[in-house]
Image (cartoon, one colour):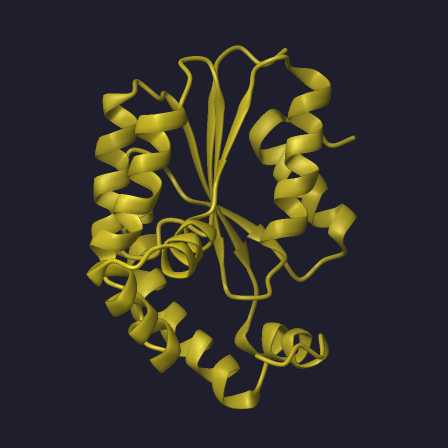
Length: 201
């Protein structure tokens, strides 16, 4: 039995399999609990703004996106902050896909979750090597998985996301959970279940 609303913060290198594991987790929650689930993916929210708005913000964000540079941290905080303000129900489970992506964002997110009284917070890292994920991305055959863009994603992870992981390991009360992402989908899911729910079935 799941006693309280749970919060999951999934992170990892691009191509590590976050989407697949989030899908399996959602299926588990839906099967074993009646609470609603709020899924937050900042990238989708940003793309919607860029594609549907004619504001200065949308224009500048689009220029950054086209140049391949990183969006500012405040933009990510706005994206998930608005989702929480508009859509979070008191007893809902929360799943963040790919957030936070910087140490500053991690601190602000901790503050937000504290405000909402979220007690069970699980930052989850799907831990994979650069070599493993580069090979996987190159094998997907997507047009944007060029060698240069894959390298940029690797550099971005080390520059921005790594400090967020360090924050969870040294400063946050929400301790980072490392999962070996270089396993089969079923093995990764089983490890997550074991570490969160003590469920290895």
